[in-house]
Image (cartoon, rainbow, N blue to C red; front, side, top):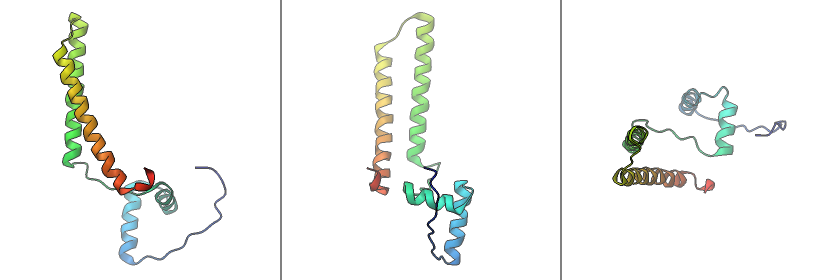
Length: 118
């Protein structure tokens, strides 16, 4: 963000429950001031909480780990034998396609949450 002087104020009221939620969000976001949190949320879109253990995210992590393992195995064999097998490359392509599709579906869902960034 640019370094222009901030000389405009935004003032709004909240009730006790809303205040407590805002305080928890401030802590969760690891932001030093409420002003920074509000400014970021208003200028850059939404604040999104997500479950790190969500099933879709677990599937993607497993897919990436599996693909990385396959790449390492292929690299080890190529380095030691100078051989590579078409089937392994085909399977690796399938893994990458699966990962891309999973990430693309998440991107579509995120765009639904914040259509102004499309």
